[in-house]
Length: 207
Length: 207
Image 1: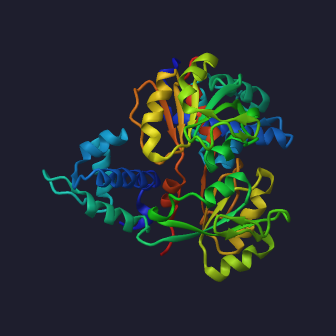
Image 2 (image 1 turned 60 degrees about the horizontal axis):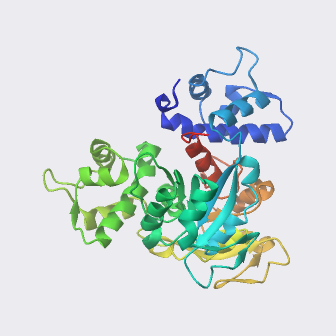
């Protein structure tokens, strides 16, 4: 099926399937079933079978899924059978923490450059990176051909920086700034805002 | 309608409505419409009206919504018309960044204690907090009656720490560790895993 015909909500579940399959593999399992996957993820077995059927199925009736094969297929579908370079913009506390996070590389991503516009921060070392001046951002990103950025700048700066990133050729932005971005529709944007998730949970808590 | 009868996916959208209403209020707007809210959020106006109708509506036909009134109602529904205390566990780079994040307080939350089990970290200062030993966690959380925790420990430690938090009376966990937690169903758990969101986006990127 053509990529644009798969519902986005289905695509959004694939990384979670992959995460659980990796965990099963680490625990020494070789095969799994839609029932077992569903139980781990809190998703019905029928939903999992339906989701995977969009991409051709991958399991045999009665024998379940080969974990190694399903991992390989999902990585190919999600295009993470390669390592994607990431440009990180905003070298505050959060940006520094992310730049030094060890968990990206073996899941398909690596931060390759970090930018800030604060003269006191530009030129400083963050892990193995030297923080570059935001004024060099467009040229540096174009040169390497980076397609993905993470944005950890203050909310007030986020929109303008995002527009500059798009101008530089960035096509997907993971936005940690608590503000919605208005960008061309072909640019992928995902948001990380812990407060939205906290507010979701407090709904269920007695006062 | 009784809280448990509202679909969780509806509840999950309310914080996003609130975020957008706050933005409109900052920009000086006094009223809005389901059309305008929908355009900002990429959600249909019909969906927004339907979501809000679960809680009684709040708008008058033809005159739209009073932003101040809708903010107040949503804050009450989400139980953030009070400030919730948060215990943060894991004082690594990410934990430190979160503990010092300025954006929580005016959105209903504040970190009030921070724990770690590393003797080199316990007793150090993170912003205005002294990192406490994880061995004191249960007693300290019970004493203050904290109900929400954020987990920024290594994946290998997350399940055990989460169980201890539940024992201490924690009822909602925002988990930054890249591992699914197995906890009693009445415990709210939300996950923050940037890699899941990055993998979702790469699906749409050409290789």
